[in-house]
Length: 194
Image 1 (cartoon, rainbow, N blue to C red):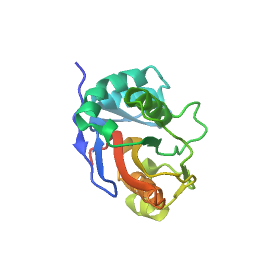
Image 2 (image 1 turned 30 degrees about the vertical axis):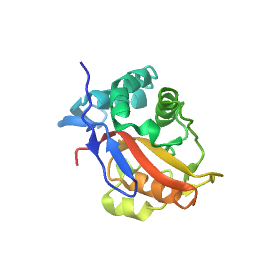
Image 3 (image 1 turned 60 degrees about the horizontal axis):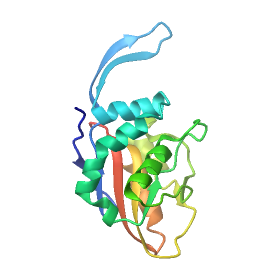
Image 4 (image 1 turned 135 degrees about the horizontal axis):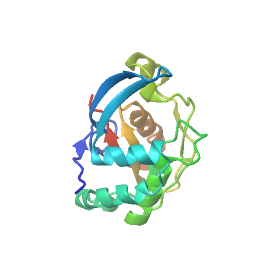
């Protein structure tokens, strides 16, 4: 039976959770014949689902993710706390589909709360996972608010992977520039072990 282990994450937001670590272990095996590093990686249940969704483009994993996390969403009572769901803006616009958009659309259906893309935009498309902490600090503040709300709202901000918190911190700060944004809650599917 698949399970999650929610982990509270603290930041600029009201309350936030990563639903589990992404990997349980990863052992370096050496390089393949093309010089690419090879690893034997064991992922958490949700880590494996997110990996298959994001890197194998297996959209059927969205339903598995939602089925796995639905009991936690009910326990957290997030549907009673928010008015809108917003995905973190993607770094790679050229993807055939955006995994976080797929997840937020499914969350929208389960919670009965609308989701909106285009509220936030990344002005720097560099993926944080490839950067050192010094480099991450240099690109801080590269998420901009593109749309404002006409009424007061509480927001659920969703991402697939929490690493350093830079992206979610920047996104939350951008959202809070709108005086109608009262509370921001954060949900990430997984987080790194560091």
